[in-house]
Image (cartoon, rainbow over all chains, first blue to last red; front, side, top):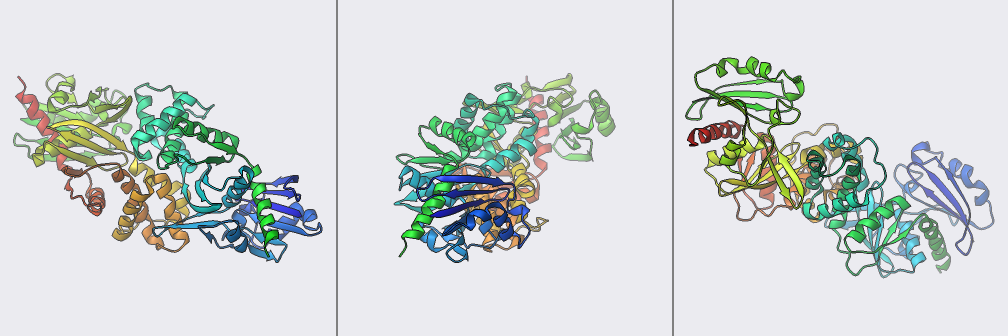
Length: 295
Length: 295
């Protein structure tokens, strides 16, 4: 197998060549995310970044991420949950049959309200394979954090939390910005955990967030600790809504973010495993293998 | 009694002359909120707006709002809850003894986390007097909405929700802004109530807010209805945290805002009474009467 795995996001393009055993032979990265690619230029940009790999014998190219969105190369319609490897493989949008395909995102419908993800599905399936887990909760922190519930090897449902974005808005543009220091600085673990705990009592970030201001007003928390406290409030509000008892919890993302979520979860009595970008490439490889296994 | 009631906020100054029966004889308004008054200029600005009233025989001037904050005329330290009329009267910060006083705000401490309000205390006491209510929940919507619990004629505790501000941030500065129309338009009641209901299921605005985007993505809600839906999500998240069963609920504020909250409350099976600016002047009058009754 010569697998060309492509993770094509909004602001960056990452490609990897992966061998039959799932080992990454070579990896490249470029700033040409879909927002920097004019309509019609996607084939040329892909060739530019890994044309040499595409010409290898039997090369298979799987592209995940926003390249499959309405603003990307071509829309790959969301695959509805519950969805396993097999549903995902069947829902691939083939650009060059048998050679280049867009991986669809997933959609879910909760009492008439939809939710979507795109790109994270590959990471979740990769993490399942890496950890040999068929059940659990997979959390992908970021601007829009995804909580993905997996049961019997399939994605049952998931939910999006605008945690990273709301933190940024409160930190930069709300009245709290006046109390906060110019820079976030290093994480203050005690202040962060205090925020996580207060979020459980406040029961809404709309209420909890205001305590960042009042704690500053009454000098109950030193200014450098306030960003960590606010971060704890936001992540704590997210965690408040999940019942994780007895479930395996896996965090996937950058070390700085997964460390913060692991800390918050530990503060609430839950141990989580952590994975980084290895989950992405493993997901492409697992999907390619799934394609090979199909009759 | 010649009462000069002053409501001195961040961006505006309102004054009223009130007679012994609580009737407003005359009312004036100026844009000279505390942010527009240089340090030391507060006495002159007050004279400018109502010096003629201050010179009336036996005039008593009570100033509520941000004029009593650290950024205002002089800091009137918060009066800790539980607090009734009497505690508030005792905590007045006299600028000219027996003649001009700043009304302090209220503070509360919930398991080590403080909350504060300033100006709303006068509205709540005014509403209690107008409605002859000694128990209930008083809600003052706005940029920072205050939920005030009153029992046996005293403010037991309260909580601040940054609802108005977070709505503005999500509406103007988040990814949702791309889906929303340029103008809010008239309230779409059905979409608003759908947002209120979804907020009860979503259990966190961090999650609920994202549905504004997905409903637009799947054409499940027309674009002009999206701001009403988002407003319902935010107010619904606020309402979610309150147990109001069996309590009198009073909304105090501008008609547009209290109407929206009344609608949301009705959607959740709770009838609320509504008051406007009459509560402010009645609060000043009640407080002045309380001062007169003191031994």
